[in-house]
Image 1 (spheres, rainbow, N blue to C red):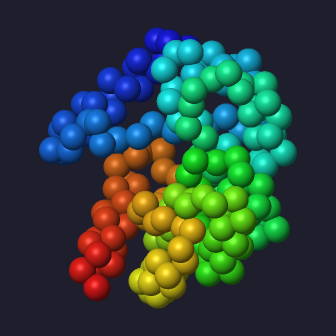
Image 2 (cartoon, rainbow, N blue to C red):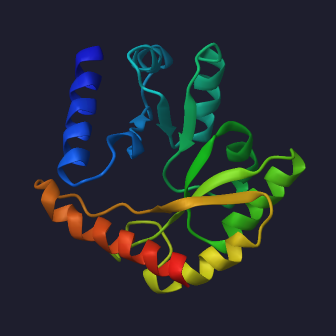
Image 3 (tube, rainbow, N blue to C red):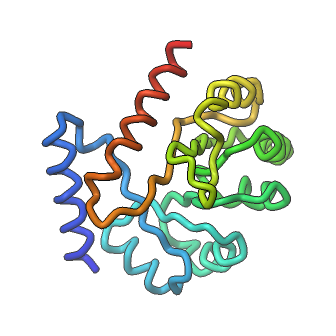
Length: 187
């Protein structure tokens, strides 16, 4: 596990340096869905500082088993509005806010426990029907509306590009997201 994680971190540092980005600005999220708590514990011990989970019930069980570990927990994947209250109590960052309805539920739940919940707005840059996310054309409107909610803090945008065997083919989708982020900041 340690060797795999070290190899991934080396690749991240090289890729960041090659494109002129500070390697420390890149965050590696180790996805734990369907993995047993003891395997997650090994990943944390090897240096995984952020764990991504997309099943609320599974996350609850892992939190109990790993409550002695210091790690940030991120919710990844589609989040149903009726699970918002659980997500706010469990996760340090929610990656997949794609509607005002969900944002309002998260805000309401965060307000009840006096928390400002960090979130990412998910944008469907690829326009794939099977992917979640707000349409690119509605992203600014959603960001503005969510910005008015006092118990949410937008930390950025995220997207899930189509899967390609060649990772270079995903780059245009991330470039489009970066461009959209600049447009939103300028608006």
